[in-house]
Structure formats: C-alpha cells, structure tokens
Image (tube, rainbow, N blue to C red):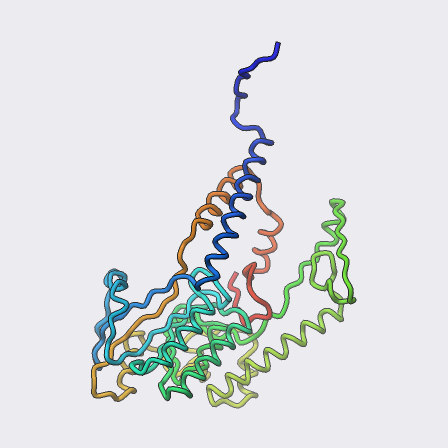
Length: 358
C-alpha cells in the first residue's frame, strides 16, 4: 500500500534537495540581476556630495557623524569652494567605492561650476586599469587647462600604481607620514596553466579558435615564448607611458624615473626624498595650504565628493545564496585558490597599474 503521507527523513534535506534549492536560488538571482542591470543602465548609482564649510585660514573640519548628517544639505551652495574628490578603492569601471563614469562626470561638472576654485584629490587606492587610470589623469589635465584652477593631491594609507598615476595630474602632492606609494610598474597578464592538473583528474577541455594565439592565457593553454613576448610588449608600452607621465609631472629626468620605477613601493619619507611627492604632512595642513595658495579675499569652503554605490536587492540575494552555498559545502575551491595565489582581484581590468600586497 502506498503511503500518501511519507515520514520526513531524519537529518533534514537530502543532498539532491539541497543542490536543487541552490540552483533555484541562483536562477531567481539571475532573473533579478537582469532587471537590476537594466535599471542601472539609466544611471551610475549613488553618490554623496558633502559640503563642509571651511573659511580661509581655518582648520575646522566636521567629524564623520556630522558629515553624514550634512548629506541632506548637499544641494546647499557656497559662494566659492574647493572640491575634495575621493579616489578610493580599485580604479575600475564600477566597484563598491569607485565608479569611473561617476568620477569623470564629477570632474566635468566641477569644470563647469564657476564657484569651484580647485580640486584636492584624496587618494586611497592600490591602483587599477591602465585605461581607467589614464582617463582620469587626462580629465584632470583638461580641468586644469580649461579652468585655470589648481589640482592638489593628498595620499591616504595607500596611493600606489594607478593611484600614483592619477596623483601625477596634481600640481602639488602631499602624503600622510604613514602612506605607502610608488609601485610604478605594469601588470599585463596573469597565466595559470592547469593542463597537468586537468590531466591528473581526467578533465579534457577543448576550445575551438581561429588564430594561433587566440587561446593564449587560457587555463588549458601553456604560455609559450611567443605569448610571453606579446604580453611583454603590452606591458612595456604601458610602462613607457607611465614613466613619461611621472617625468613630466615631477620635472624629473626619465633616467631617474626609470631607476625608481621598478615596481617597488615607497614610504612617504622615501617618496619625498626621491622627488615623487612634495611634502609629508597632515590632511588638515594640506587643505589649509591649498586655501592659502588660492589667494582669494572671499571665504572659501570645502565640499567632499565621494562615490557610494547604492545597495540593490540582488546584492542581498547574492549574499544569502553565497552563504547557503558555503554552508552546503559547495565552493569554487580552485578559483579561490588561484585568486589567493595571484593576489590580483578577479575582475581587475588588464593591463593594469596595480599594487598587490597579498
């Protein structure tokens, strides 16, 4: 006789049921993510503009809690101001704390605002894509030439590689005494050859291509000398561009720049001694000195411009699905291992000016 009401098995869900539930979660996630992407196409996410009143010669700064409450007054307009433009996180198209379109649009808006008297870059970044770093550098150069305003830079905990590249657009570069900077170099590719591992476990992978080098850098394609030469050529070209920018910005002979640009990082004191920055001082003094340099009889205030990505429904769903997958023992062990070994973000655009402190 068939039992119409079978008893629940001990131990909860079966392995097959768990797997099915995980698949269902990701299908729902994919559907919602598609809708979110379409909505996101209409805008660049969220940003906060925090006006902080600061009179000429003053060192009055609002604490973080007051800055947060001041966000609701972001439409309030001061007569004249300098913009503290935050460059934070990996320099890529879009991330948690950085968005390329947002920062370019912000620079463009500042150039069109006659009340803006200059930009102070606050940089806390390990670097990022060559394309993105150079695009911001050129936008800042255009800003200076079109407005006649000054651009200064202040380095936070880390202003390396692409972060230093962007700082080269500044007329004056300050750094905190604990800053790490430099890392003037290029990563053009990372190759992980898994052919022997795949062979060991009987995994066969076939990629159909046209062009003998189309499959290079793939996990089933060992790097050849030709592949290495191709990627080295890309790295060398980007390196020449980087060192030329440093040479022009710091008024330094190219030979000296290349001697310093071996990819190493420098402390703030070392960077100052080598001419890579101008001064080691506090953030407050950097702002105060920039206000002095403007030489304006009127009061000048400070506005903070910082990108903050708005959380979406898909973010919370993905976090929940990831947590459930880990609890069920389903993880991409190999991908995680490769990421840990390389120390390079999975979605970092290459070639890149990036410092990895794994």
